[in-house]
View 1 (cartoon, one colour):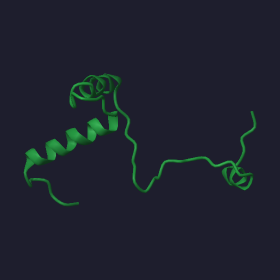
View 2: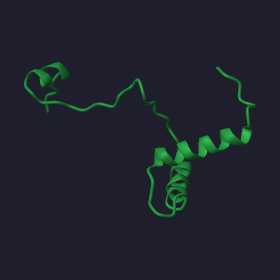
View 3: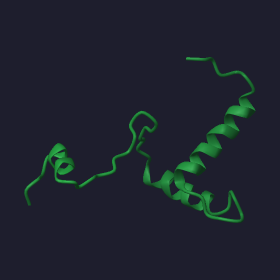
View 4: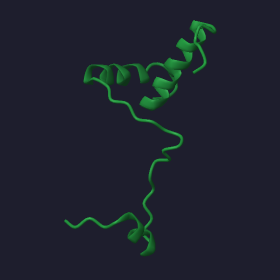
Length: 74
């Protein structure tokens, strides 16, 4: 399979949607943690199953509130 450069795809009218790297970062998790997130996300909001990233965001924001100002600004 031959790879086609991204700029060439745009010229041909084929648009690829890429993640906005100015808004998102990526992390690697151990498989055990990944599966725990899967379990948590199904019960954290009872009405629906939220995404893994939303689950992590909710947990981090909750922990930040509990630390109550003890985090230093970077």
